[in-house]
Amino acid sequence: MAARLLAAALCIACLTSPAFAETVVVRQHGRTFEPAAIEIAVGDTVQIVNDDEGLLHHAFLDTPEFSFDIGEQEAGQSSDVLFPVPGVFDVFCGIHPKMSLIVTVR
Image 1 (cartoon, one colour):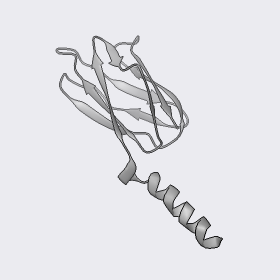
Image 2 (image 1 turned 180 degrees about the vertical axis):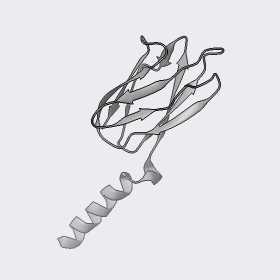
Image 3 (image 1 turned 90 degrees about the vertical axis):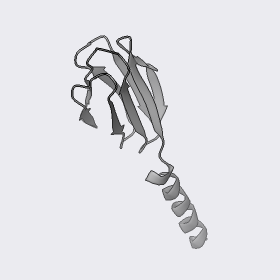
Image 4 (image 1 turned 180 degrees about the horizontal axis):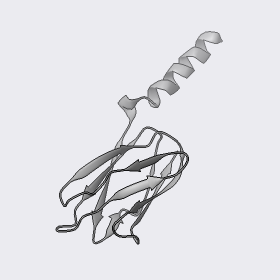
């Protein structure tokens, strides 16, 4: 029985390890995030790409659980953000306040 529990724990650890993490691409285009909402797993990465030719963007998140600020992003640039904790997070653009991305981390 103990061996089965250990094997199950190791299997769960394998599934949540970085080797199984995914990267989800979110584009900033037309002064919006595309898609506007995503669902990912703990440890997954969101790649934020500025596809708005000639426009700067500035994606950030500031919560007690998790925060990031990628700074100003020129057209064509991308930034990777790893989400290490579960929750529902609203990502905003510091330049275009109507831009919002909802990231649900399970």
